[in-house]
Structures are given as structure tokens and as C-alpha cells.
Image (tube, rainbow, N blue to C red; front, side):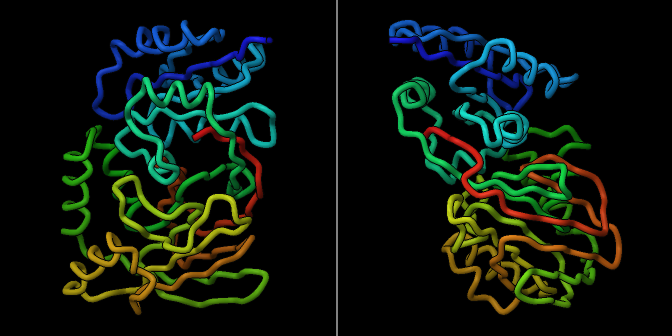
Length: 293
């Protein structure tokens, strides 16, 4: 039988975890399972090109990412509509996609699952005909929070919490939007717009209770302006899966949309800042990625 070929893409700068023993762990688990493997470390320079070249050269059956959502996005974007499968070892500050498909942090167990496990097909989102999203993208509060997180070069849950408190201390930023889908046109005031291919953030907060990664649809969740005293209720509803019951939340399910804003806002996709924009196009690409979990 032909040996499986695995390519491990390790981001040593993700999260606050120690990666010093990662290579040895991978080799020790894989050797008894009779697979071929190669390991590529990202450096922050030309990573997409380097990963793409390695995939072309090595022709792996599966590419396994060890990092956070940004690393997953970088690799998965190269695997769209290909026969190559994606595996995930979650080691980032946020591991949203891994959380949504119940991938844990016992890496020995997860590597074995990737080698022997079941392949699932999932959808992806194409944003502005250029960027892919596999988990969550958003405009507004959370995108600004991620930008703060990056600029302050903080890591881990404590860093994220610090930036959240800084964001909440700032004056509320409300903007107007026109959202046009095949079905309807909406004019709304909002503090945040989420483009969701999944149910929850990596923290476990459920922002999109109806979300499924393989249903051929995505959800636009609009957080309308809310009074400061409702913030506790907002967080409580998120962690109990009932956020869609709030009057401040508008959920739109569709296959494609154009979102226009009255002023440029920060846009992020899977934890990576894409810059400021006042127009976003989104469409679903059904069953476009093979993922093992």
C-alpha cells in the first residue's frame, strides 16, 4: 500500500505555547504509523508562496497546520477545490475552526486521528473575490479588537481580554449599512457585522446558533446599537446559545451578499486584518474543502 504523505506547517509564533518539542512529537507519533512526512516552519516572510511551493514539490495527501486560525486560513486557502485534505493542530491564541469541529489539544491523539480519521467536506466563503473565510469574518468591534491585539503584539487569553477591555472603554462606534442579498435589501444601523460559516468563536461564545460549516449557506449577523447596560445580557446569551433571541441581533441567511457601509471600517477574516473597506462582497463556495476531524 502506498504510504500517506503528510506535510506539517508549523507557525512557531502562534499563541503563547512552546513549540520547541513540536517536531519531535510529530516524528515520534508518525514513525510507527508508516507514513511519509515533511515539516515546514513559517517565518512571517513569503509564507504563502513557500507553503504553495512545498505543496507543489512534495504533493502531500494531507497538510496539517500547527497554529491558530490565521495559519489555518493561509493553508486552507491553498487547498480550495483540491484533493488535498486539511488537518489542524490548534496552537493559536484563537482556534475557532478547530473548536467548531471538536478538535482538541491532545496532539498525539489528533495526529493519529488525522492519519486514520474521517474526511469531511466543508464550505468556504469568498470575500471581495480575493480572500477566503472558513470560520468567521467581521466588521466593527471585533475586527478593531483584533487589530489592537496585533498592534500591541499581545498573546494568549490575557492579552485578548486586555484589548477587549480597552475597546469597551472607547466611545461606541455606530455606522450605517445597506445589505443586499438575492432575497432582500436591508438598511440598518450597526456596531458590528459578522460573516459566519460556523457557530462560535474559539472562546465558546456562540454568535451564530444556526451555523453549519457544510449546509451551503452562511449567516450575516448584525449587532444593532445597544444600550451599555445590556452588555451583560449580550455576553450571557452568547454563552448559552440564545443570542438570536435578542432584539439587538439581526440574522440573515443567504448564499451571497453585497454589504455597503457609510464609512470605511476594519475588516478581518479568520483573525487576520484585511484593512479598512466600505464595500464587501461575499459568496459561499459549497463543499470546497476536505478537512479531517
